[in-house]
Length: 242
Image (tube, rainbow, N blue to C red):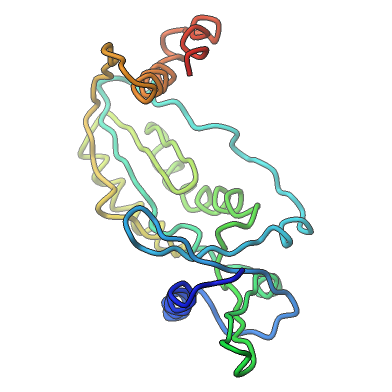
């Protein structure tokens, strides 16, 4: 991928950050696929690794969880604990024999020296099996909590966890146990995105003026469909407007 001077400098800086965190190591792997950077809306840069060629030759693990669990099945009086795992993919180590397959190199201006090549030591974003492996790994970490607190509801999808229970004090105890359990697997919480929440009412927006307003309305209705018995035929008039 051709890179401007700004993007090349940014790429080197991002690679340095990942090396300092132990996510990347120098390599002489025969595998090599492109990398580039994009600027997010926040203004920060993001490192992207194009793994299409690698994905084409590795076995597809498939989808373990074809959809997200519906929160409408949680009893309305129960308190809810929302947990967000921090950098989940980067907390899951790759098998040493597989890691060299996820290699890339940094461009050197005017071929002034040998290329600088690195490979990932952790689950790379962009690998087609990363979401499935993440699901399996987090599921293992949560199994002791589910076994210890069978009366609680525990929803898990990728790096998001929702736990619901009757007693907020018990949920606080669960949080302590979960922190210890997740640490054993090298997983950590996004503290600013993890919190205890009382049930909130669902409000349907009735003043629809834009397509975005309509999309939000349909999204809200979708959350309540299992509880209210709303089928696709009933929503067809709204779908036709999208």
